[in-house]
Length: 506
Ligand code: BLA
Image 1 (tube, rainbow, N blue to C red):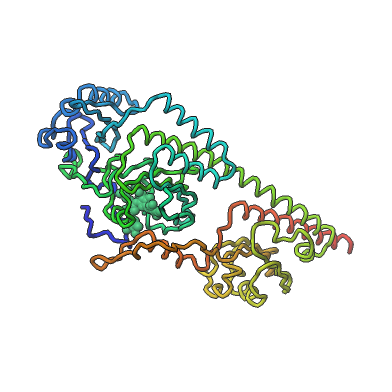
Image 2 (image 1 turned 180 degrees about the vertical axis):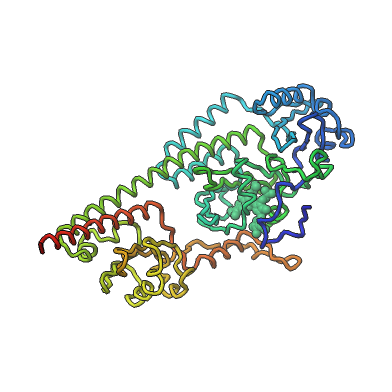
């Protein structure tokens, strides 16, 4: 069973947030049996929100608990295999929205205040604005900034961030729009543990989520165990699902009162989040959350287009350089001279700090590099045992001696030329230095409770900074592509030179 005590900062991935068994305070979770359409479980705040006694609803037909209309519509759509849509509900002049989702044999209904209904013309204006403004942005950075501005404009949270994941699920704040009195968090990084895998998985499915009041009292869903399955109920599709106590502490440490989070998805994977903070409670209604979902979907589509475009542009740029290098190699004959004595050099092929050619026992350097002795040692002790292509953004993680030259070569991309000889072409990238700091932030450094260290984002940031010693900007797939093409060209030229030599002897 679920126990808060068992979870601490070292095992976040194991917290079973999908069966948390509680609802946020601003709405009621009503669960019913999809066979009988009788209510099987319900959050206890039904008394305060809908004025219905909890004891009176269990086992009752859904139509008697909510309304005939709502129950009939869900039932009909479910039985016809149609997708279920939110239904309006009015109880004593108060307007609610019943938002359905399905979990196994259960229908889960989030009953929440419907808020002001949206004027359809204004709604359409909003969507058009989203489309045009994101369309006009030039780069991915620009698009992130535009998206943050749009979200600020639409929902007015105090701080809007676009948070981007790296390949290990650490994240960086890449765009921010905020109230002027707040410190900027732009450029700050956080470790993957701040958003554990279960939380990321739910985002991928659900897309958008609010925490309306960080200091709320979660309302238990009772009975705790589903009478239908005899197991805890998976409520991960419910937007009203209560929040992990660890994440609540995290937000409380930041003095955040409410949040809105939305997923940015690229090629089926979580690329990043729109993360919004408010410094007091804040509820945005279902329709507003749908607008936010629309925004992130438009954003995701544009992101896919821009990413493809960036790949093609970089590949084209490298290909220009590769063609010139080929021309130099075919006219000069001496391959190493052709690669590093003229303009362009092999280091112009991709973005790097420097590079080395290791050819027939000689080493030729270009740009910022480790010493020749260090490179020779690296080739003999490490690279010679690797595949033809080798790349890493942190060579020191695999070969600790490399920390000595982290300022020139934390990242290494190398190709072997010729299978037997130890001939290599290598590109280097220096350690990516973190330039942003928390200057002037008066916040404390996290705290310890019951022997467990809990984290504030500031502490997370410091932990991240320690972790990235000896780590360079990662190599992109277009870098690998460019290096692969160059190798093919060189092999081609070498084979031809060999053949010409043999022909001239005959
Ligand atoms: C969830 N952590 C989250 C979420 C975000 C972050 C955005 C999703 C919130 C939501 O569902 O609405 C992290 N938020 C950030 C970061 C920034 C921010 C990095 O604004 C930076 C500006 N959190 C920890 C540690 C643990 C942890 C150490 O820091 C684990 C022990 C857990 N985070 C945690 C859990 C959730 C979470 C369990 C899921 C909460 C839930 O959905 O119930």
